[in-house]
Length: 606
Image 1 (spheres, rainbow, N blue to C red):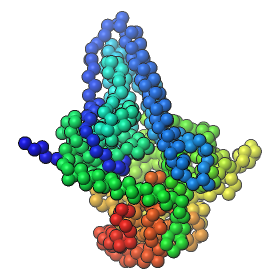
Image 2: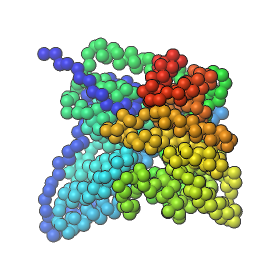
Image 3: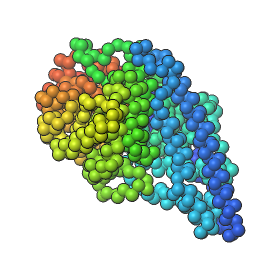
């Protein structure tokens, strides 16, 4: 009997074509003892638990060193392709600690978390549970604190608890060896920890496929950093695939084919060849100016966390950092002192060597809260105490951040961005605090940029309707397109039930973008846009036509968007925007944009 191929549609998490034999990795079940111990056994059991933690720490430290070496090699390769005028590190090393390395750092910190360690020891001592059982009960309690959090970032933090707990359990039971795979294989798993992913990299695998996860999962993050194809959320493929089965995956489209035939394999290989050729063309154009056919200059900047991938950002010809998210400095590291903020921001500012860095103040509160911090859960976090609202209540924390940004501004072009602004009164309250911190720095003789630009994020409908008033209070606007679309349409894009209503080309969204642009232009202030709309090739000409010539996006989107900019003229963009604004439904606008762009752009860009 001929075994038929089977197609799975997942989420493309890291671009590229992978073809190889399946290697299954099952990390879902760690078998452990559930026994009660005698009173005299308690000290030895506690010692066994602490020894397992020490072994886990050594394993993670070794993996972190391995990842750092991989990152440095990637940075060195990127350095060789970067124009000479932007070389800031002659040895080609990454000058900023990357997000991917901090994943392992966070796991090592979690191994010493008092809730985990003390809670397990207490169960061993008080309930006389064996170490494995006590640890599992404690892990369950820690995870319960995160059960109701809907944010993608914290959904992955629940996975972190599992990954760290499983590592300790494996070392307790003697099964702590790292995962490995045959060279050239495609790893298929229900889910993978960062440590599993790194351990598998030694085998020079062809790609990853997991049943679960998202674009923010660690498998996706690490695969992107190291250039490996990956597909997540592929359903039940780990149950249906067998070791040694042939599999092909497309990390851009999310397509996975189990047991592909010759025709399917030929199609995948053809796609791989075409993409490799196109990517080479894009890389060869990185030195060209980012301007339309008619000579309109467009600034393409990057969204980053904690200085992630600054070397790659420079290598790809970015015009700066359009959005430096800062809340994770607090969420993961609990940094509250102004000196810690200043050091973190200064690293990024100095690495950009004169290019602008826009630092967004804490978008804390709502779903973005630190475990064990005492934050009160809210019934509707998206409409709750978050971002500037939270900062204006927790003023000591906010003042420390403002002071840190000011101190960093002495070392390069720095801009301050305030999220979730809903009224002029909020801006004025922040400006009072900012001026007080300026005065304190002057009195202490600490240098800073007296003319540092201050901007407001436009992501609430209220901010759109009073954009003309807000524009008189700030130096620039930055439209947060993800939240703006979500709040205008009252549609959570992560909800399967209403995701179909999340339409960035909805007429209401287009009018909001137009009104914001007009307010900025009328006041003579800067105007930028960040979020998913900025990195979508189909949307870019429409955004240019609406007046947005400064866009901030994920780093890896830069080469493709640069080609789109160079493919259009401003007359075409303005005509498209004018026509789109006359339409009354999102499907009508989507059809118009799709038809017009397919006539202007080469298929590979779409």
